[in-house]
Image (cartoon, rainbow, N blue to C red):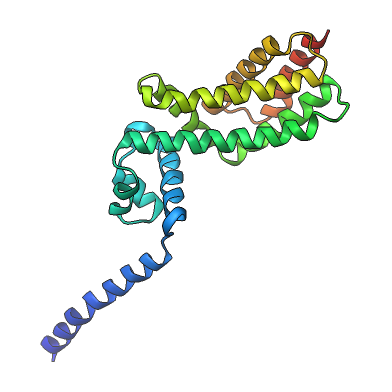
Length: 219
């Protein structure tokens, strides 16, 4: 009887495992959604473990897709890195662009700009710090991989364009030069917060620094 039970158990087990795999396959994203899931998984892996940990297997596990799916869409690690840079940069620029376009038509003081911008930046940073870590990692990786530099350059140009629009709105006499100062200041403060987090980052560091900067640029 015990032997019969063991035989029946061995017979059913493969079927149960196959059913689970089939269910997982049905739940996994398909088509463009699958490709995006893979890229987002790559960003997550980079943000949590660094670019050296980026492998097709690690990304497949994080995305919940078969290993073959990652190699189907991205033949090499460079391909994955390039798409990760493009997606992370595009989404960050879109968030900042929406904020700047909302604020620019309003008659805001430099202090108002500092308050609104610092609140948005700090909230974004707090909600997903790993994505910001990933992006800085990707920017540094571009120093070693020329294939990534074009995407990073687009991100930098977009940041400068948005910063120029902002400082122009508050009355800068030299918005092109001042935009460089704004981008450098924000990048440095955000990087510092990622490395050494402060509990009241927005209130005690980011907002006062931006307010002082904006006021000085418009006097």
